[in-house]
Amino acid sequence: MFQNSLVDLGLGFPFARNSKGGFSFFNTGVQFYTNSQKIRNMSTSHNRREFFKISAAGAAGLALLGIQGCGSATKPAAAIDKKSFGVGIQLYTLRDAIAADLMGTLKTVSALGYKNLELAGYADGKFYEYAPKEFLKIVNDLGMDILSSHTQVEAKGISLDNAKIMADAHAELGVKYCVQPWVNDEDRNLEYYRKMVGELNQVGNIMKGVGIQFAYHNHNFDFKSFDGIVPYFDIFMKEMDPALITMEIDLFWVNKAGQDPVEMFKKYPGRFQLFHFKDMRTKQEPFYDVIKDDVCSVGAGVIDFKTILASKEIAGMKYLFVEDDNQGNGKTFEELEVSINNITTKILV
Image (cartoon, rainbow, N blue to C red; front, top):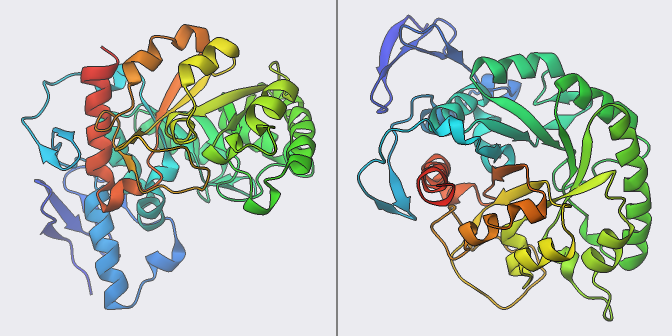
């Protein structure tokens, strides 16, 4: 029932509706569909509206807004090669958009100027339902690289049972890092933490065998004291083998736990190769529940990123990734543009 016809989605350039009911960027031949068969076969008008809404937001060539703060628009920043700064993005930030339209979302991420990807979509040897080499080609063709991958998000993640399979898949993808990003709520106790660290050292050795650096990503709950024992300092940093496991420091969660990242770098020099950049609107008393309400775009809050980066050599930092656990509070791409504009015009300069 569909014929090739031009459609204006309000993004400043036309789309062609193709014979399959999808869209092509006019005169480019690039088609975008959701990676989910469920969405590809949507039949209700409600789901169609949701699909078009997210696809429109995620379409490549999204008009750059030049926003410099949460919710406030100013004149666009001067044209610069943002990709030359090597800013990365953790794709957990875009989980809803990716579920609706993987290709369109990746194209928009590239258009915004992000260069390096950290994935959050591994399952059963595949990445976002693609074989490793297939997904790598998709990303490389868009002018981006895949540097890192979280084993699983808000799930058990890697274990000795699945470590070799996961290591081989990530090696085929060609990533430099594989990261354990989460500890389930029921496992946040001293007995489990000690067992976990022992196993993660073994996982790190398996990853090292295929040329991948294993890493651990913190949350605020890692700093909760158990009768004076703080797992992050008294178990993780003491018992994790630095040759096998580096730390991916999440600057938002470290701050929410009342910790000073610069002091952490001084105490454990060279152990923080990966940085997660996300900002917070307010300075609060330390807390240890995973409450994300205060997340905002990088440079739009109160974290002093320049001071932290002044100690990057002590930290051993190699790469940074922008992350927004709240997906921009409904304005994902706008908030991601705020972040990369601020990083490339105010923080890394």
